[in-house]
Image 1 (cartoon, rainbow, N blue to C red):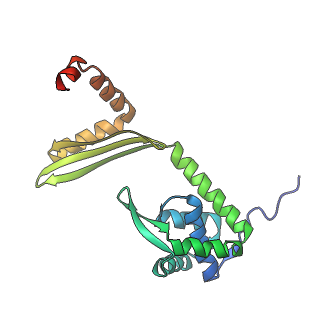
Image 2 (spheres, rainbow, N blue to C red; image 1 turned 180 degrees about the vertical axis):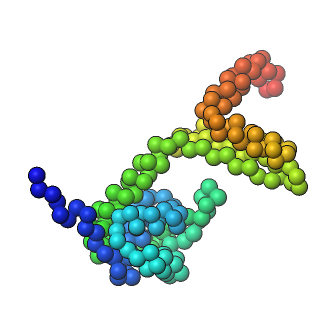
Image 3 (cartoon, rainbow, N blue to C red; image 1 turned 120 degrees about the horizontal axis):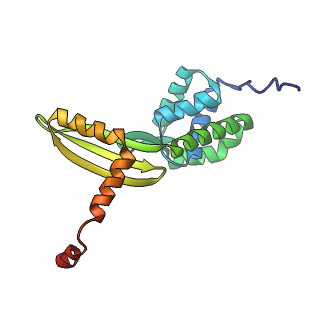
Length: 192
């Protein structure tokens, strides 16, 4: 069986304009705002680009108004501006087809892995001096099962609540639903 000698050969992106266009392509293809780390991950996974050149290109497209920073889920992410979209419309064909294909594959694989994960978030947050709360969130794909903020009081209690939630998030969710389902239905009629 013949081995494909070109299988592991990457096109070296070293032209600043090509790198900028590839960054814009990543953001457009993701079809949602993506973080700085995600852009860098996609570019480094799919192409052979110098990290310093990549960082400079990202800063340049932001400074030139092709991308803007938006805040999603308390994280700063990049989104295309109208100018960035129009520029990519005009010059997308200047990005080599193999680079576009590699970027698509890297982005698709990343989001496939992320979507298949059950997403659990549990953060301890100070609510006042010497008092803490715990913010929990349980998601699967795009479905949110529970989002809740709990007052814990002491820092030790907050860590205890966090450990309890993280030990079995789906079990906690099932118990919470069970507890709420057992409420007396006559109470609904009284409160209306």
